[in-house]
Length: 282
Length: 266
Image 1 (cartoon, each protein chain N blue to C red):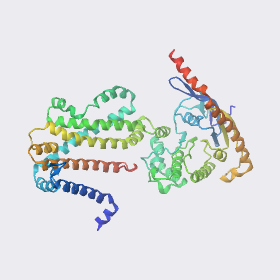
Image 2: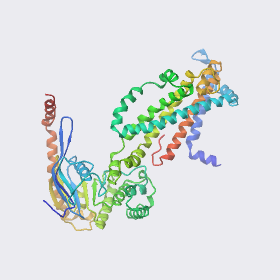
Image 3: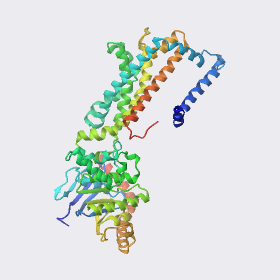
Image 4: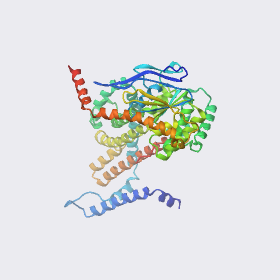
């Protein structure tokens, strides 16, 4: 389990939300190693706590127990070492694309404005948005917004990119184009990446390592090494190897989803909540 | 020529003119008969009002009323913005201040500005100050409530993204919370500006007695009515409408200039 070469280690991490009379455990004893320069994809049934996992690694939330180590050092709060690309788009609507991209470096003042400007322009070129630098986010298409957000994360040269279902909400064609674009970018830069998704095809297409989460409370159910050659294209999903991985992943996911389904149907849960409430008053 | 092209590009302008003319025409036709609901009517017709207006605009006292009302509105409104924006932001970002000030604010808020007139007359040394104070109250609550709501509802993803990129507390406020709240600030300003005109007129009717100069448009309406000129009272009413409209238009224009990213609202 202990891989000293891992860039990021999650060690028996738990997280629960405490409400007035119920304790909701989202993540329990989750352990996972993320290898450097690899794409680790995390997949799980909907509502299993994937976003909470991202929030913990990003430092927006703290685990109730367990440890998160980046290169052996515990994670303390948000940092530009771990940049998140959010669901939907989280570009600041009041800044144009260029201003959005230089937001981080400009705040930290580690480099001169000229250097920042040069890098921003190079990144704009790379994501194909040079012409749109002066536009506001709402003037861009969904796909362009995601590319701008990738550039905004990349300029901070993070050690780890955290992608929280970043292509959700795009139409089918843009979705596929973004996957192609993102694959190419990753294969070029090999920037370590944790990619959260709920789509199996996307997971197989992108992953070097695929972690399948259990239903709530989330644990790592299985880790599959996706040993498909790079560079990859959408075509690879038609290969028998990819198909085998997909079957394997789907079977595990199906079991987990089924548990969720069965559990939701039980009236006991309902009554349990009431009995706890009763206990609180007595 | 250029005017023709301009009007074609902005059909709203001549449609607006058309709607105003239609209303005036309907009014004229209906009241010309001098019978309203079966009784003889004293409601003046637009043609008589316009004829009277042509005389009135030559009088200095009329423009003096405009000046008085406008300066009161702007003074009260400016103070409401200057105090209301920081206060609303403070309530939004600081839990202690919210706990301390919000209850007091909520107790004072339901009191209509006009109910403050007597107390205000006693409290402030001059009548002018008390009128401005009442106007200030009218818009202050609208500004604070909107700023507070806007600043509390800033999308947490913006804050988190900025935090990851290394923003400290002041930078989060200056670079994220403030710009994200700007649209709500303008909404509050627009609502507040509307209330100031409602308040200034009533305040002038109640508080300003007997002075022709410095009475303002509200006094102008009341004074004309008492003096027996209904036409002139209606002129005062329409002037207030036009004054309010120009003030809100200026505000909307400023909003568009300051927030080019924001989808323009009606």
